[in-house]
Length: 106
Image 1 (cartoon, rainbow, N blue to C red):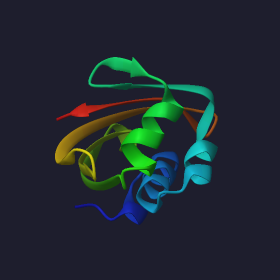
Image 2 (tube, helix red, strand yellow):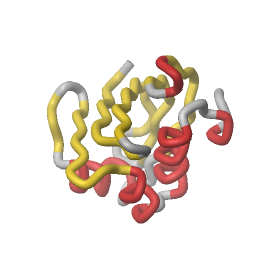
Image 3 (cartoon, rainbow, N blue to C red):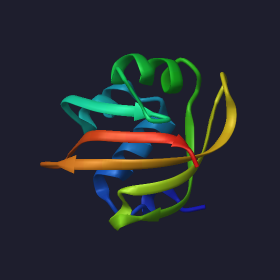
């Protein structure tokens, strides 16, 4: 596993840190206004998805590997709803914030 503080991209590092801390404010701060996302290929509302999949269910990422300068991750993701699964994450960064992320089973 890669320690969060050693992730290459500082914006992605802030995202993972916010997820693992359950910090809604930090999570929102790392996203652009109007950021978009998809889960297993289907676009979702970021706020609804994050509340359900991260914050109210104890979401946590353990990063296994990174590519594309740290903007693509493979992570063991777990929450109280689904348990643990191997997931892939891809991030699009604009002006120091994430404007889109995509996740799904790896």
